[in-house]
Image (cartoon, rainbow, N blue to C red; front, side):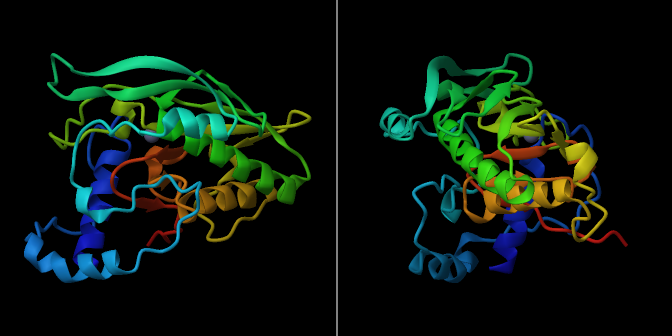
Length: 267
Ligand SMILES: [Zn+2]
């Protein structure tokens, strides 16, 4: 169990933000390739007691495909799910292709431009994502509204993000590519409240403090915690995770999970 968790954690670290990682920080421990036979007992323990899932849980919690690299499978119920959630989107084509120089595959078979949900939040720039990410973003908006109401008594009206689709290889780890390569990730940087106040990951998260010192920091931490714990996204990486994420939350639907919402004291 621990070996598997450590491996998944490492894989999450490697893949999550390849678009911005150019050189690897020191690894916490060597990577050990564990024979599948020795994983069977922990894997069966996980498989034997699946927890009940929220209908808004989109994270991939199946450990058996954690090491699969490639575009996500299309979601069979995509159009029906978008319609049921009253989510506005436009179908787009981002057919998987091999980038000539790097030879990595980018794109995804089922991509949309996300336009909004009943939470009435606008996004900029435009949001080109997989269908499952569109559904997860709509759920994320619900969490934003609930937590903004709790913290400020106000709604979130706008989100600024730093990118969704970027086709890039990861120089330090050949064979591993970011979920951004499949438009299966988004980097959330700033949230604008009604009235115009801005909550910024860079300015308000304050990752050196174990507990939030400001209303804005508490809001950001609550949002990130729920996005991970409620399985809205597979990976949620915050400024707690590393310096590459100092100014944004990386949210994705990778095949493995990565909890980057936990405070880690610096030695
Ligand atoms: Zn990212």
